[in-house]
Every structure is written in structure tokens, then in C-alpha cells.
Image (tube, rainbow, N blue to C red; front, side):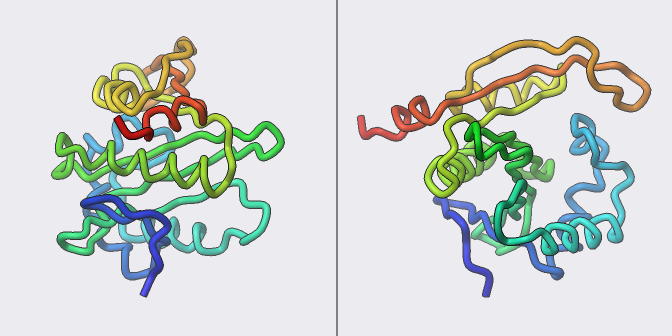
Length: 187
């Protein structure tokens, strides 16, 4: 049994296992899902998923610079997406969050629940001070998600990403630990 890193009402963030490859491949082999990601290829093959899981499992346990978790939906116990903390800077206590969900799970509040799970992990377990996200414009859904989760818009990097032959702007959002803590306070 894989021990969850964090658990929400409908999702569990947990370590990936080899048997998750098919579920990851099925969800990610969708042009709309990979459209606003930097490094996820389309089409996305089973080999891509297997290689990703192998890389994640081989990362050293101490002084980690990246954590990737499967987003498991409790209802089916299947992986519906991935969320990661990358570019972890322990000296300055900040990291980048990146995520994707299978299209079938969009618009159901699962991404927000997932985002709060990784924020809890980052601020509570890793003792981070700031978590940021880069969003390709025009990924409106991701911008709205970050804003609903308490992230603040910091700026625009003009035409900084070449995706499918088109230059896209990248927008930077962040949340500070103190802002996250205020959101978690009982009303």
C-alpha cells in the first residue's frame, strides 16, 4: 500500500507506482491536457509514462529538489493527474508548483483541492515561505484556479515559451506562507 502524502475530501496525493503508468498515459494523451504544459509531449505514450515514473522513483531521498505526486481520486483509486513541486530552493524557501488533471476531471473543484494539498505539503513539511506557478497565456482556467486558491499575480514574461511553433507569454503567480495560513484559519 502506498502511504498518502496528503489527503483531501475526494483526492489523495501519493507517491507514484509502476502500475499507475496506464492511467497517466490515458489521461495525458489528450492534446487539450498537454496544450499548456512546457515539457509534456503529445502524443503521450505508455513508454513516456513509464519513464516518468522511473525518474520520479529514482530521485534521492535527501536534499530533494523536486517532488511529484499522483493525484488519486478516492472514488476509483486511479491516478487522474500529477502535481509537483520543482525548483525547490531551500536557502530562500521557495518552489514552483506545476500540475495537470485529466480532462474528464476539469471543472469539479478537484484541482483546487489538489492545490491546497500540495500547499500544505510545501508549507508544513518542507517549511517553504513562497510557492509560485507559471501559467502560459491564454490558460484562463489555470489563472482562475490559482487566484481562487489565494495566489497573487506577479508579472508577465513576454513570449518566453515556444509551444507548438507559437510564442506564448508566461504569467507568474505566487502565494506566501502567511497568505496560505490566513486562508486556512477557521471563519
